[in-house]
Length: 115
Image (cartoon, rainbow, N blue to C red; front, top):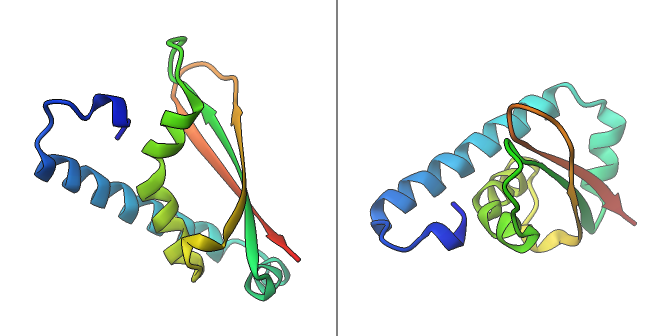
């Protein structure tokens, strides 16, 4: 879903990928919510806004721009917001990190209520 890879890709296939990414993030967030203590969920629900700490772990050593990684994550962030019952406009502070790790690439998103 990297915006730099959009050239020559049919809009319908990109829409299908975006929808799948959003739904996947929604259901994964629901799984995490089920294992989250009620006190943490209550603090999140009581907050007016949410801070995001996003760590990108690349599957290889090819360099990537953080701004493109964030843009590619847009459908997933929409799914996360929907799962926690927030409008994604409530994401007020976003910190982007590069993680280290070998093998499988991944994205770790941590939420923190802002008082």
